[in-house]
Length: 251
Image (cartoon, rainbow, N blue to C red; front, side):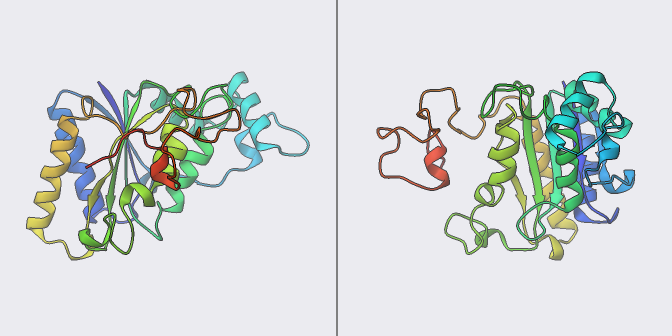
C-alpha cells in the first residue's frame, strides 16, 4: 500500500522529526511505499494567493478559481505535485507538534492550498463520501502537556475533540476514514527511553493502519440527519456537542 507522510516541524532534531524518521522506516519494513512531504524542509508556502491559479483574472473567488485551475490543469506546480501525492496514496499520516490547540500554520496552509474545490469539497458528496473516499488518515501529535491532562476529563480535553476540525472537518468531510489520533505527551521532557517507547507505539499503529476501525462519525447520507443537516430527534436524543455525531461510544 502507498502512504503519504506529511510532517511539519522546524527542527530536524526534534522528537517529531525523530518519530517521523522511525515511522517511515517502520512503514517501509511492513512493505508499504512511503512518499514524504516535510513541509519545513520543502520551504512550503502556506498562503493561498492568486498565483496558485495562473489563468485567473479579475476578483479572486478562491473556490471558483481553484476549481477552474484544477479542471484545466493550470494550477501552481507545487500544489499539483502535492495533490498527485495525495491521490496516489492509500493512507495519509499527518505528523506535527500541537501548537495552541492545533497544527502549525504551515500545515494548515497545506490543506488550504491542496484541497481545492473539486478535490476536497464541491464534489457533491461529503462527510463520509467524496473524492478522497477509501483513503485512511492517521494523525500523530507531539504535545508538551502530560497525557492525563489530554483525556476526556483532563483540563485540555481529549485529543480527538481538540482536533475535531482536522479529524471530522477535513479528513471525514473529504471522504477519508479518520483514525484515532496517536498522542505523544510530555514531548518537551522526552528522554531516549520516552522516544523509544513512542516509536514502538507508532510502529504498532502502523501495523494496523489498514485494518483498525476508524472513528465512528455519522455520515451525512446515512439517514441520521434531516434536510437541514440536524440530527433527527430519535438519534442520540438529548445529546449535544461533538460526541452526538459519533455513531458509537468509544472506550
